[in-house]
Amino acid sequence: MIGPFPTQIMERPADFNPPDASVIIHGTLEERSVIPDSWRAGTSVEFVEIFEDDALTSFRTGGRDGEQITLRRRGGLEHFWDQFDGREILVDYTGLSHHIWMPLLKVGLEVGLNIKLIYTEPETYQFVTNPRLSDFFDLSEKIRGITPIPTFSKLSDPKSKAPVLVPLLGFEGTRFKYVIETLQPEGLDIIPVIGVPGFQLDFPFHSYRGNADALSLNRAWENVRFSDAACPFALFDTLVEIGEVRATNFLQISPIGTKPHALGAALFAILHPETELVYDHPVRKKQRSAGAGRCHIFDVSEFVRSRRTP
Image (cartoon, rainbow, N blue to C red):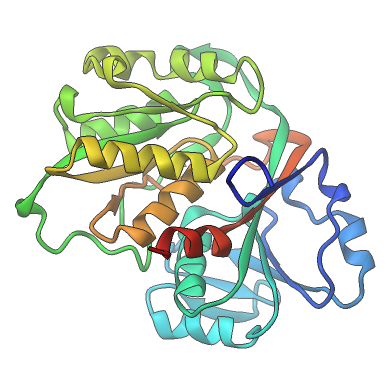
């Protein structure tokens, strides 16, 4: 437990011991998302690997030709979770795309499962050989475009309140620019969040440099907020504070930064359904990072229960 938040931190993934009879849902999009051998030592732990495709509407389990789960139908996700009822669920979302783990988390929480999410930091990121100002790290191949994340629907009456954009910034300034160009918000209606402290000491500086053009163009740098890059629950509280200050607006949150920040955004949207998630669905490069750093275990069910209790 770190402070008031239900978080465990291990120096490396192998230091974590999955509970007996638990279920680990995982993907393997990059090196650090590969399940450590020590986790498989316990024969009572069940591992369910998720296989993604480019459709953004489904995933498969049990292999590339295995059972297909449709993300747009709540019933399909409920059926997926039914088979694990009564067991502790661990979702290692390090190697899963947002359009996969966010709907799984939302429906899992809504049906009352006890869910913890696991995230492993990268040891290093892949630098670009000849970088532009907004691209220091070689992280994404392309952007698919802004479309809704399944089960997180658009606002039914967006005219009732004006939006304020809250981009959760990472290193990729081109993605921040794309979101701004698509939504065209006013500078005063952009409240960026940068991860401070970062996973590593220099990471916040890379975030500033990578997003410098967009921050300057809209004078959005005047509104920058800071929140621990590795803590979804701290980010949740930052969003609560922004929502209170801009109570006459609704929040459009763009989770283009760290995975823990994206989790905080998803939890906020789940508990504040008037919120809209704005996501550009990048195709991540396979070799974008190397090595595995600290491993975080977030007890999201405990956090949600604490925030729903009067």
